[in-house]
Every structure is written in structure tokens, then in C-alpha cells.
Image 1 (cartoon, one colour):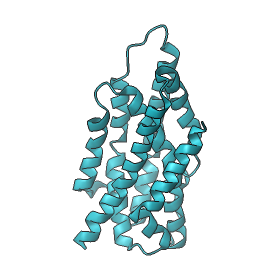
Image 2 (cartoon, helix red, strand yellow):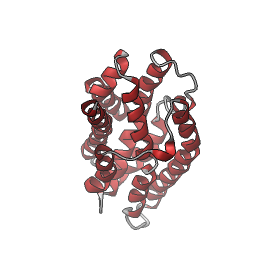
Image 3 (cartoon, one colour):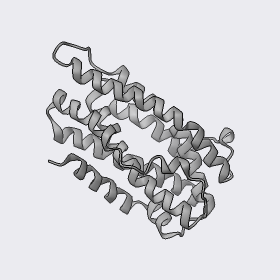
Length: 218
């Protein structure tokens, strides 16, 4: 099974069905709805490292028969946290450019629910499924970011898009670095796929939920 192809197809299908991303691609989204969504994305992303921390905290004891796999997964999780922190300034610069004050963002109900959802679904003692979910979101990120990047450049005429440019390349390397040792640990690829596909759907739902909140309020 070509797992990357399966999950890439899941990502494209989820984005195609999304009211937020469909409206964004069509050029019909009001600018204030887009900036509202960016604000909530920023708030959530500032806590993304906690999701990786949940995986670390729930990781199994290291034994002789799983040392290599656990070490590889924990290494990539920690590296990803550091990489996200390195991108923090780029995202703040982007928000400032589109008129958002990063220090005055308050989370909406949808954002709070999404922040809590990871632990509700995967903690405690769901290490393999939690890592699989994050791996799925890694693959989704490039497809999601391409849509956002295209809209910013063509519809909204925003040209300093350094942050989104940094996330349009497929994250296959990060994905495989997590997925391959997971396969050795669990030997249950269908279960891992369900977790990854579920997180792809949940991430897209977050954008739709935020969009719906602001569209109704307007």
C-alpha cells in the first residue's frame, strides 16, 4: 500500500469538501473572515507543541526490542517542536502584515474545542495512534498551505507570504520518519490510517468551524 498516496488523497478530498477552503479558492471569501480564521489558527498553533508533548508523555517504556523505533519517533517529535518555534516569528510577521495584532487574539469556542480534542481522543495510552494522527496532519499541511498561498497572492494581493511558503513542500520526509517505526511497533496499518485520516478531517473541520462562527456572527 502506498500510504502517502492514500493519505494525500484523503487530504485533497477533505479540502475539496470544506466550505472554508472552497470559498477561499473561489475568491469569494470576505477578507475579514479570512483574517479571523488566521487569528484562530495562530492561537491554536501556539499550543501545537503540547500535542507533541502528549505523545512524548504517553510514549511506552523503552525496551531492547523497541529502542530504535521509540528513539526515532521521539527524535522527530522533538525536532518538529523546535522547527515550529523557529517559524513563530514568521507567522507573527505575516499576521501583522494583514492587520492582525497577535497579542490581542482571544480564542473562540471552535478553537478551544480543537485544542482540547487531541487529548480527548488520544490520551492517555494512545501513543501510536496519536503519532499517526500528527503524521497525517503533516501531510495535510502542504495541501492546505498551497490553497492559502494561492489565495493570498491572487485574490488578496498579499506578497510577503514567507510563512506559508515554508509549508507548501510535501512533508513526506517527516511523515515517513514517524510512520515507518510506527508500523514496526503496531503492525496494524489500517488502525494507523484511521487515526491519520481522522486528524486530517478534524483539522479541516477546525477551519470550517471557525469560518462558520464568524459567518453567523456577521
